[in-house]
Image (cartoon, rainbow, N blue to C red; front, side, top):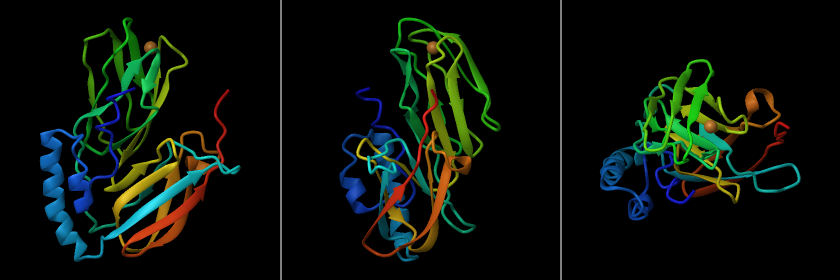
Length: 231
Ligand SMILES: [Cu+2]
């Protein structure tokens, strides 16, 4: 798993100076993107995109829930998300890694096979259908995701291989980590619906929505999601 998560998408668009100083793990190309975003960030700061949002996602018994995607939908006039560089959905030890990946609309995702045997990756999800026919180690495949929604991934050879790519058309999206915490470093201020999605959530569309109010500084909210993993 090491090295797979550096380039994961944790919300693009306006970023804070804190982000600029924490990009040591990112490549120069991403750094340039971040610096450009930072310039944009100063503009948006004047338009009240200044609050940091910390979302703590738990199950009903209070356990941290990783791999939940939190997002604030973009409204007309809001900034568009930039396609992200360096997104990867690897196959390793007969599993996908990561389990959940956020990809802004228009992003190209690599599907490296790190195993010594072949995989046959597919998605039948509406708007994000594709098939990567049998391919082995050292063979590279890429897919560009153009439709906001969910791509549920599987492998024709290995039934246990399951993963999800959440394609988003908002700059405000982030995934909860092993501690159940997701962060939007620069969320839009004011009252907005916050959507929280998990592939195994029991709620309709695997999503719960709650309205929250983001103010300058840090806003922390806790969201409880009931999940039922498939057997
Ligand atoms: Cu496979």
